[in-house]
Amino acid sequence: MRPSAGIGFKAEHCSDAVECIASGLWFEVHAENYMVEGGPRLAMLETLRSAHPVSLHGVGLSLAADADPDMRHVARLKMLVDRFEPFVVSEHLAWSAWRGVYNPGLLPFPRTRSALDRVVANVMRVQEALGRAILIENPALYMPLDGHQLAETEFLDELVRQSGCGLLIDVNNVYVSANNLGFSAQAYLESIPGAAIGEIHLAGHAADMRYGESLLIDTHDAPVCEAVWGLYEGLIDRVGPRPTLIERDDNIPLFAELRRERDRAHAVLTSAPSLECREAAHV
Amino acid sequence: MSDLAAFQDQFSEALHHSGDLTGNGDAKTLRIGLSVHRNTVYKALIDALRANYPTVERLAGDEWFKASAYAFLAENHPEEASLSAFGVTYPDFLATLPAAAELPYLPGVARLDRFWTEAHIAADADVLSPAALAGIPSDSLFDLKFRLHPSARLRWFAQPSPSIWRLNRPPSPVPAPDRLDVDWVAEGALVARPRGEVVMLMLDAASFAFLGKCLAGATLGQAATRALEIDSAADLKTRIAQFITFGAFMPIAVPGSNQREDHE
Image (cartoon, rainbow over all chains, first blue to last red; front, side, top):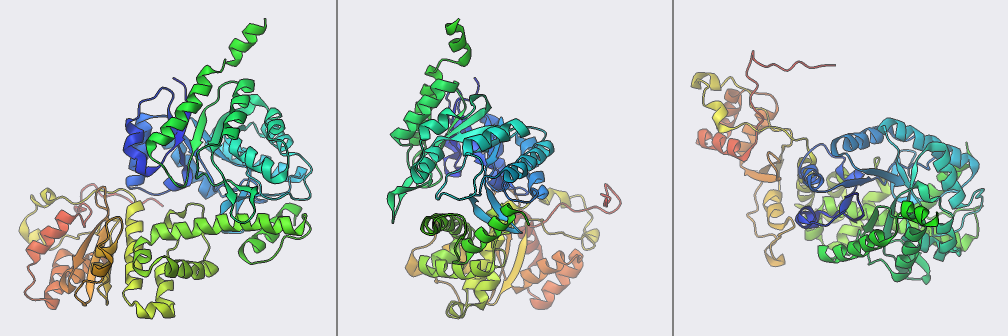
């Protein structure tokens, strides 16, 4: 069966993950964790990959930096792609590394046309080196910036058109950004080109300790909230099934709990009519 | 310089020092948003150091460790996105801290945490097996060069840091009252990952000298001579068998056969 709903892989769940039998189950790993020369970590990924499809998710390529991608980093990513044959490879619409310093975060930038040119060029460079298209993930935003020339959905749409990349839509990021910046998450999701979506992320968030619900943080440390499930169901209803990941990076629960969330996403995907069915029904 | 580059210069400066982003919006909301990003970045950096120096954190306590980590980060940033190997100079940094003078074994413990990390991510490589020596005539043995496994790290410690590290390294540290229950003597250690797991071998002065000679490219005979100079009663045959069982060595390069040529 094609990948349906998956779980973010955690080393402490390795044997549960490898032994889990569920139709359409897949796992996602962070590419940078496996950029090592040898050892148990890579052996573990081999074992996981022999049991399930794997998605490779990068966080450090800094594609929105006004600089060429670090080609040594790209080469290490390519080694992982060639060795583990992930069914999808993704990165972020953000910058992190800048002038030789790597900042482990996903940083914002004013979405100007020249910034778009830079991101398009960087994405194309990476895709050429990897020999395949990648997916770009929408960011979680915490403050409005002046100087945008393009709305985020416009920017992503242009990025897809000009570079040939796909999109990884993180519904929790949309919800968090919409809350923090005061726009409609629903309207945002409705303007994403459905055909470009190659993967969906679902995750939890937390209210900032000082500012409360007016500032939500993309913490990935909690179950997916009902509002995000609702937005997700609406998105799938519009665009059809897409591989969907349950993302949890902190406060890791038992594997069974992640499995339950995953199964809920799988149920949404398998009950959604495919686009082909829907088009046939209109005839 | 492009506008994007200028923005990223300003943002980076504000991220790491307490400056503000100016000219990009409302000052207060910018400051709040920047603090979210700063918290995320620094949490990830501290977590990376925690992951790589768990025994130091265990011994020094969370507060002290975090303070040392922030001081380290003020002068050291990762240069690459893979944080698995981040913090290579933290053991040296610890040794310069006045507070570390009260915990003289702590820089050595940090060094061993570092060796563990390096061994853990080192390239896979074959190990010299006992059977490999079986066919070699005993009068040729002393001319052989025993090369240390590429994952191996070797060090002599003026403090009993290896014993302390072994007692306190997560995931199974001893209870707090027992954490320094060691003989206060200098010790050597060999850390390696010859097969799946990282392992440590404690060494006395003679064993350390023997392995040090091997690391430096000496023959078995030269290494043995040095060990016996330090301890004329050392039972080398037993020790060498122990090193081989531990997985300390790479397969022997037999002169004249299957020589791998270096390619530039």
